[in-house]
Image 1: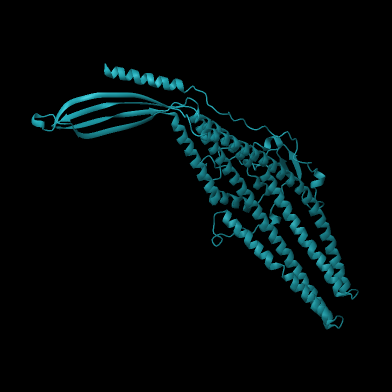
Image 2: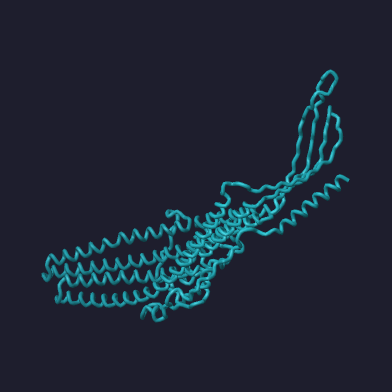
Length: 500
């Protein structure tokens, strides 16, 4: 009869708990911020604006087209693709982001555990002695008490405080997921940028080496005229000075190349001494002709930095609910059942059933204004997160606008640099012929060569900048990180994959 009564009471307590679960959650419900009422980032450059002239690849912007998942493959460079694949596996910043995400996901599991009753098994053994009970005041016999049974405790989420804590943990996990996506996008963009930087620096080095070769030709020409009595010793010294000055250009470029190669090694999680990057060459990179441009209304839903700011805003919203719930009463229900045995002088008095039901309510009465201040602080934190979100959106749109304009200016710069180089090459050839024929002096020859040198380096830098800004456009558009690479299903955390 006692066992049946205990089961009835425990069942009744569980029914009460389940009924209390239907309570409302205090605090605001999070609403995603609306998309900006902006139809364009800036004036979209026309195909004519992106045309770099004869002999140069053309580009055009395609508004609304989806970005390729592995956008770097549009450069059609097996070396670049292989390098990025290695970086996705070995980069330590990406590995740290994966670990942080895993930690946040486990914290979410821990928070969700508060929805369920906590069951523990308890056992107790004690020996006690009662007061005097024998004839002549002799002491009573020692008593051994043994008990064993489970204890169940549960805090019903009447006002939704637990739900808000779980919501907060989920938003934090989402924020970490977006940070991983941002790390993935930043990594791929940095590897592509460094690879293009290596290729551009090698192009500048080749240009300087051609300039030095021309200097040596000029010096040989002036020396020949000196031997023929048609030039002064000062002309030779001037030509030698030009050669020495141009040779000074080479070491900084070699150092720049070394720094870019070492940076690539670090991005791959490798020591510079154990890995040598490929010799990237702009001539072996294909400039993508069609560049997708995401609609402004879609950008806020695919840039990981914007989505991270949105998740942080959600976290701040849930924190208001957590702070509000702490101003309301909290309830704890507990139940225990078990067996108890008492032994006196080695003789058992039998095994008895025991059970208990308990409930406790606590409510804040006077906290010196701490709870109210805590909630006001949570509201202030939400307002700050909202401002950060809006600023992140503004900066993202500004970055896209800058990149679009940069592509138009790059095409204009390449076209101008190409024309300047053609003119400088023709002028240098004519000036060299004129000098050989004795119709001009060495100063005019060197001045023409200096203009040709400047035009050659400017053209190399303009080409490099065009490739770099093209890769930055893919990054500014969000890089389509939410589409996992091909092997993400089998290795979801080994390749920069995210849940999207």
